[in-house]
Picture 1 (tube, rainbow, N blue to C red):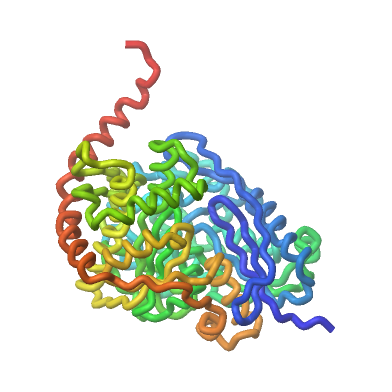
Picture 2: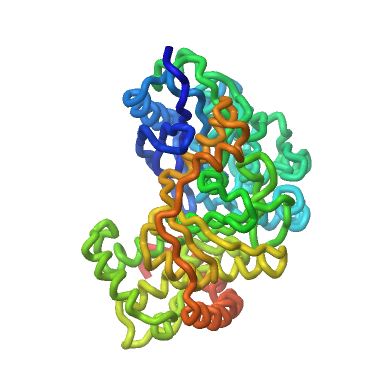
Length: 515
């Protein structure tokens, strides 16, 4: 008889579905992947067909079940892109394309929504600031701009709930998936009547939310035929990809934080209490116990891709060019020869919560070349992390001893070294790959009985460090001085940025018209 000794962790991100089978020591034994298309039907609009989520999920899991005996899979759990949601009718079918976390169409509805709820009340209930990313303002947008869709929607459904419906026949989700929608009372761990009422819905139009690791159902025969899974395989509650990536590196102690150096840069620190402040957003922990104080910068490695593709007209995957550029930038001193970059290419989330914020490069002269700009963009991202970390120290008494780095540019010694020097915190590069998949697999291991708890699964399955970057004393002092300048840049430029944003919006309709 085949022993069920593996768990399946799934990550449905913005661009792909990934499925990975792990053993109870966290070793990956099989990986499947399927791409996802992203539609941009208009300015500030980002959408996907929920049916594509299901198709990509089935393809990714089928790759795994073709490589390992599905009878070995004791259970599965799902991590996913946060804030994204679908509108389902009474039969569970999508009424319109899903609106993604990137979608900014609701920013104009935020002021009236915040007046109804109150900024402090919104943060106290949901842990979130007034931002266009979560579902809350987008459901308010639907009520005014697509009232028929709003009225016909039987279920406003996060990504996990939609996929769980496909796997088990019932749309259920977890606290760590409900939470990012900004409709969830993170203290009471239930949907908030007050926040739902503010956007014209009742909590029964949202999926049932359970603790991470809770059994949500079992794979149906129809889903088994589509994926290659064994019918009856348990489906356990997972959560949002940010919290799941933190769980995947066992960041369940306030001194050990996760640092995701991807397209966006996200770091999170575990807290036993839901501490609230505009300098961060407060999330429920993927372990089901405690909370995560999280910082998010939408433009991380996105900046280096922009610089390479748009300005240098080279591909970031060109190893030779990247090696040369990183060597040139590494030879420069901290501060890039007097160059300072504000990394708000996609607006500012915490601590400023300003969708009109934009990037800036200050101090340019004819002495600067490509290496100065490249180093300055890394330093700008690192100084932003240092800024928020300093606010956490002063306002919440948080003292992080180490960051565990995952994500694409975590492979760069230059990125990791500058992060350590700027923040004053050691950076560990983890062996963990597909951290969100691994975090989901940890939830599955606990829920399926292969580990005594999610915390126990995290301790047993987390990867080791392949390298550690310690802050260098002299560089640390230089970055501390530079942070003093960086801290003043946004406050002095924010008014100009807002005027420039208004100017761009005013000009947009006239584009292409003759004078």
